[in-house]
Image (cartoon, rainbow, N blue to C red; front, side, top):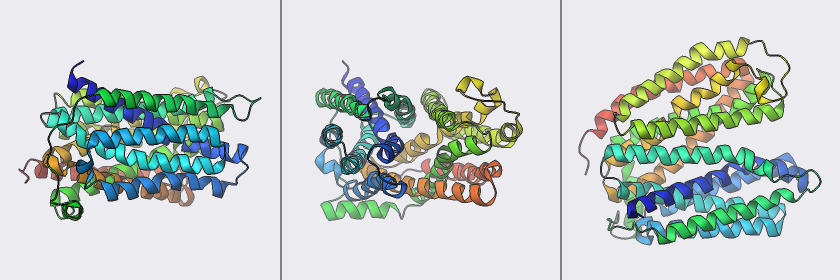
Length: 407
């Protein structure tokens, strides 16, 4: 097999496995309450155990990960989650779930920084970088969608512990990915950001003084605010506004994840032929049009009795399809800024991407939640037009900055 192809396939597989594990936190929160008898507040700490290690580890290791080696870091991450999945099955307790998501958080930080930096090693120009970044992020969204169906497939009403069998499958997938990556040959010579570990960290912090990086961080912050706000609160919108049953509302969230995946795969194909700027301009304008013209129809639609997805009127599916148009924004923005920076700065830049994406996602979800409370579920999503418009303006500034040579 072509060395570059085997390396790319290993990146796809790595991201796919982690998408399933990361998106399972909501399912495990529900199971923790039912099986382990913990209350809502205790169960919600699983989200903290997942997210905090991602942010902390990304900040601590991103700058000097090139010294360790991207391949070694990814192999370590896959070994960690393989053991954690087996530990979850054997432990079968709430503490085991905490350890699982802490391990997943640490491992995902290693994976994401390594994958983003490796993309730069495997591509020759900006359009190749755009395409590979978009398709890898698209596969990630399909992994998220699969989690909604994979865990219920192992659930049996007569056996409260049957759902744990999914962790043998996830451990197996992690080990398969480990083996695939182990034999993939893609390590190239690359520069180290600084002269020593202290200088590596200084180089990452110095990135924040670049106008390009500041504009990008604001752009990524706006996008993640939009995406996470919609993804997190769409089930509540479906429940309160469309008055869908709870299980159908959750399944509708998987449609958004699939549309995000399709949108990113499509963007990966289009990015080989068209400029990332015009792809994103068209996508943002289309997303804004959906909010302005389709959302009101979804709100005022006459909905009869609904027990399954096939009972939902077509207009009910229209708003989740906004994912098709917002999907390309995140990977193409990331690719644009990474392509404009020297290869030696890709790892520390990815650390900043992870940190500010987490902040944007948290703030976006909280802001939409506040809007749901104060202006109502039928009005809250209209406010996403504000960050969409701001992001549209930021794209042209970012394009001008990425066109300049960087040192």
